[in-house]
Image (cartoon, rainbow over the protein chains, first blue to last red):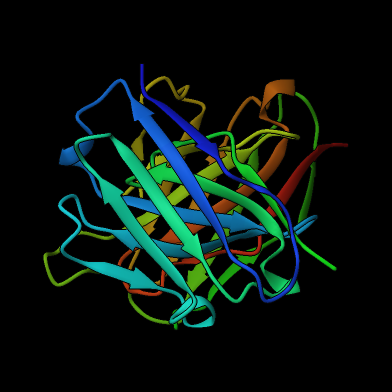
Length: 113
Length: 112
């Protein structure tokens, strides 16, 4: 069974950093592209970043480019999202997804002073 | 960026009835490889999104045949027949042909 489990969320002050992790199991992690999608409270879904199966290619939405970094450790079957210079508008539930088909339960990030 | 215009915003339906949701893109979603990367999701209250239909018309594993997708180019439709209580929630389309990926704004399926 495919499982994606996010961790690392919480409350953080504006301008600070936070790193999310997504532990994958039930499939060969190194064979799949992965992505982060977020959802602000009461809002719709918003794509954040994608990484290729081997980590050689990464893509970001403009509003996070230069602040967020998506990465992966295929030996640990884990996806990461390093978020720097956080803003209030980054407040959301962050979902890890495998190929936009399988989704984790989400990690809540609140950016507030 | 590709704009995904999803309608309606709210869709009251009777149990056992039929529902139809439209998604229109601001540019063609046909990839250079010939595939069209338009997908449909259902997000039930308090849950993560779940994939229903991938690449326009392919039902994902375990999705009942009451769900069907159609369309081409810039115009796509999700149909749900014989609506059941478990179908209620927010529906989203997603295009993954072009970066940045973009979602429709969502359709709330509710009981009439």
